Length: 328
Ligand SMILES: NC(=O)c1ccc[n+]([C@@H]2O[C@H](COP(=O)([O-])OP(=O)(O)OC[C@H]3O[C@@H](n4cnc5c(N)ncnc54)[C@H](O)[C@@H]3O)[C@@H](O)[C@H]2O)c1
Image (cartoon, rainbow, N blue to C red; front, side, top):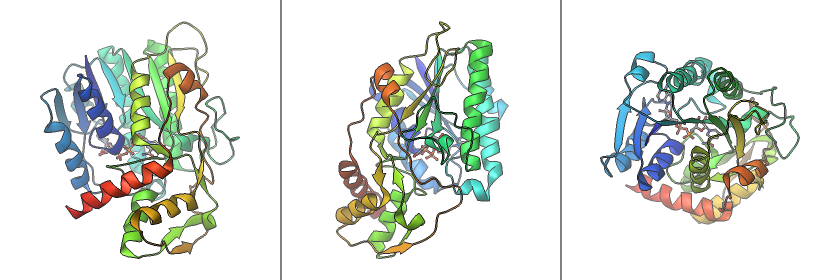
């Protein structure tokens, strides 16, 4: 069985590819190594995968390009993790989201249809819930008031997937990730940016005066959830799936079910760095939400998803990795 992993040089994609290889699967990795953040980090993630085994085949290319996608080798299943991520960048560069998250997502759906794949698992986001859904966020909530174009593009991806699951009966699972962090993480996310600043003795920009909560999810827990989902394609039996589809299309939250104040993240970074963080309190940023909290009941029940890693373990693990990576 061969699994296509899009975004294989990305944070979550590289971890998922590694876990699939570790359990003996063949993996085709697709990524265009774009410069949204330092491509050297993407290359370094890839080096770990390519160095490992001949069961990993990497294709550098754009999944919004139908010619690139049509030329991919044989695949049985898809884990679609490539995307233009980041809420704030979507305010400055909306077309990046149209390209990768709308056109690119459609090309991956077309690939699933033309190759008759057994299951397509794709990444969505907690941001689809906006700032008005009741906490904890449930996949049954309406989630149709996005506060950023990023969120709108992720919600659109779910709707495109639903139409393909309905028309072509392709089993699909959408995973709404909640603030994923850990070693080999993303430089545009708070944990990386704050760690850099704390170690440099620079002040941390704290939006909304710090009155924010996030359901932080450790990468190893998320990878376990992605593999569990991949192994359990939703049945095409007419029964309503999580998220409401009557086709073979399920939507799950993958979070930690443990929202933590942003200032607790800051405290743990300071402790792991051995330095007192200096705070610069700022107003709320456009596109941001004040709180996220995942209802993971359906993922526990259907996928056996069981996150294990509290922030107090995950933050020092990240800071250790970060120090090694940036030192060397
Ligand atoms: N990390 C999080 O906290 C988080 C939270 C919610 C949702 N997500 C979603 O999870 C997925 C993975 O996120 P990540 O944190 O690993 O992001 P990432 O930016 O590290 O990885 C995405 C990868 O996709 C590649 N890519 C983007 N557009 C492409 C294109 N058109 N063709 C080929 N490759 C392309 C990028 O080069 C990058 O390596 C994304 O769909 C993201 O929206 C992530």
